[in-house]
Image 1 (spheres, rainbow, N blue to C red):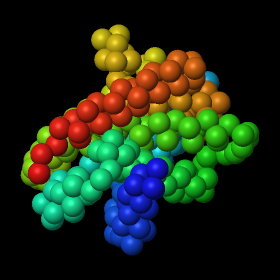
Image 2 (image 1 turned 180 degrees about the horizontal axis):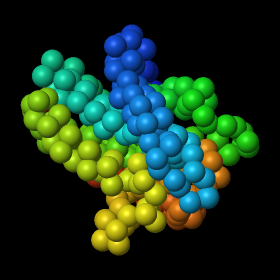
Image 3 (image 1 turned 30 degrees about the vertical axis):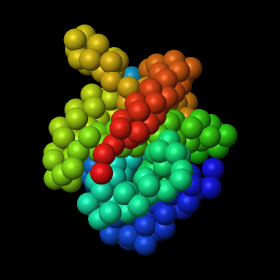
Length: 248
């Protein structure tokens, strides 16, 4: 457990010392939330709600967690190139502990980024009618962070180039986010797109956060929890397997 904590703490210190990283990670979700939310609020009518800004908030929280977590995998490539990973791997500790430390560190920073967006959302339309339900949103934010941090580590374990990693992540993550139901209700999509959306694991994370923040979800929160929880477990196992085979 000491190595897991040490690597987690290293990630947290790097995160808190990088103010530009914090600001950069919240800028795009906040921009979309303000301009897209207020711009379409008078145009888009949602069944049973009508408030597009409130509908959009869970998606932007998920976006902040998603992009922060998945790009934390680039640290693996960075550590490869600068020799830190080699020094870590030759230490008398298991690679599983190293991977879990990296995963928890990336997931924690992603969770904090989501909290920042969530707090800012309180000033632009999000109302707290049941504070206890926020714990549900926190749970889904944590699961998204673990899932996609492990996914990023799994991809980074097989790569050597940071630019290539970023290109592949953009190619994969943008469709995952766009098809997650973050922008429009699943029920309003064409049937074929609705099916694709339900195949997207992030959809269940977004709907879980939406239930926690608004009390409304188009998918049962228990189903959301089962799917995103299973995905987090699968990605952690996959990431651990690929990280164990990493070569320096």
